[in-house]
Length: 473
Figure 1 (cartoon, rainbow, N blue to C red):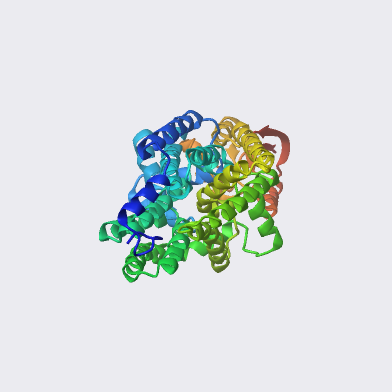
Figure 2 (cartoon, rainbow, N blue to C red):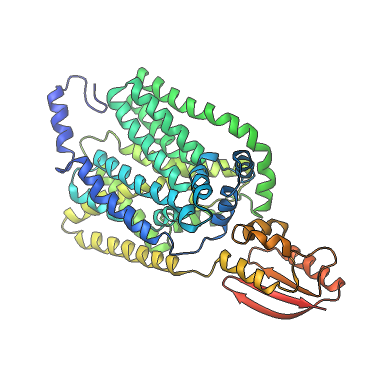
């Protein structure tokens, strides 16, 4: 039996309906036409921005010489998993700490995720125009573009999460051990890339299990998720003791306040209110359009893949007292885009609401393109430039760091900077970087040390996002 079809429906009718539900071009052609140019575009943008703080922290860990050292650095970053760092570690080990080497895994994952997205769209939408629109929405979506160009593990998690959902489709249709094994493998890769990546496939699978109520399908699905969870348990038990300290250093905690829901709404697609309002309006219409179909096999599973990452991210943050960030729910965005594309095309087809479709799409596309331009053109946070400036200014003196955690952010770019650090006696000339992330307490302690040594400030220089202050006796 095919999932969603009556038991007595002839196989020929099932195949005919499935052929009608797909665009006329082959799946391979659709993937190549959309994903290949997108990947090439990402490669052209890979060096547009300097690395920002989170990327530098990951680059510092990925620059570890030994495998064991890498694992300890990953464990010290709360909620992280090793597979999200391994591709970058391999490239950095081979080519050095270059921006392109740090970001290439995300670029490849972003292009691969779009390829899988195109395949998934063919399962939900019935026309080439809807699929083309969904692909365009993916390309301009600020949240997906940002993390396809950041040296972070989130797009790798998106790729494996979507592969898991695609495998779930095949498992529902064939209920075979082969697809259960592939589902389990993709889930393991997802959770070891970024643990929150498991939530969207979990929501999708849970709804299909409830809807289908087929014992064999349920057991195979349960076994695949159990394999993923059991495989992650050794890493969780080993890394978990280091997470409270790492969370404490973030200077943030979980509060389920109205501001959190406002932030979730505002940043749901990575932009502000105009893009969010238009996106959710189109998605709501898309949901209505899907529900109005004669066959609604996967509609609520699609909705579950949007809702589950949000609910489970909140629950996990509450458990570990970690602050909510929109990157934690990036895994729901592909499924939201499918609803948006369906909503826009159905509004357009209605005739009387064609203007509303055009307006909502124009607002989303315009706001997203503007956001992407502003993000890519902002080059103020440049740690390599700051590191070089510190080395130059410290000649004939020493460098005093406000926080001990700062050193690794500079040694990635200037390995010899540690030789210029101040000892307890300081020097006649002291250079101190002041970062936006420095706490008032750290600033106060550093200035008290300088005051006790009779140091007074000579000058302050702005270097991108930070200040460099020079003190002398």
